[in-house]
Length: 336
Image (cartoon, rainbow, N blue to C red; front, side, top):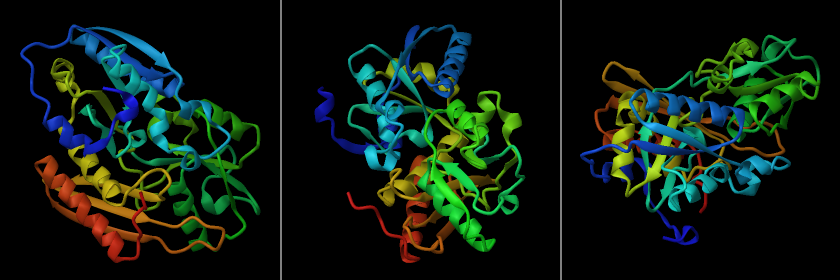
């Protein structure tokens, strides 16, 4: 199948349920991974877990377009899918058997012929405030600059600063891997930056977190903190090898979150947050939508719901319902 002709049809969690189980598991596996420090940590983590289960595993390091284009925001150059396309090519042509992704970087619909075969237990899903001198938003000096690469964080920060009566704060783009972003902060280009807590902790930078935002303060992105493993849909042997790594509660939660984004036509060009947590057998999900423009901060549109969830379809239905509530509150779906 030619990669250029791949058409996006099914959602990731629809595809994986259609992959049959094999009687035997793959014994020798190659993991395609980006070469950023965080991506390599994630791939090494999966490699170690698979090796503990008797598999021989190698890494195939790759540089993606998302890693190469650092002078423009992702929303202007093709979205977070730029981080996964080269890895999918390696899966397609047989150079690799699986690809490990930060799930928030994975498009809401996978190309035909690919499947999200495993979602692992979630790390800390929160956003982290990183600053050497300033303990939080309220402590920033006049005219301070805060860095982030995420439109979601932009609208959430603008909303938070508006509630503090702070119209002097500048929110500026910040691209690059975690190490690069921390270096830019240390060099004084920003007074504070906002990063995913999970990435900082995985790379041993947990001590750089000045504070972690409660989800009520800074609602996380869909899938934030979770690792997803992508395979070709015609590789049931690889799927079975990955089954022991899957964490069903996380998978159901992120399926609901990603369903919100899918219903909204979401991509990194849409300032959208969605986060689900378990309360007993019920899944509680909250979402927020905003607008980025040059005018004053606009109020966020928020919606939430909860329901008992046992299946992927129930999780998706919960997420779709929250997306409809967002639209009823004034949110606008992305135009394809």
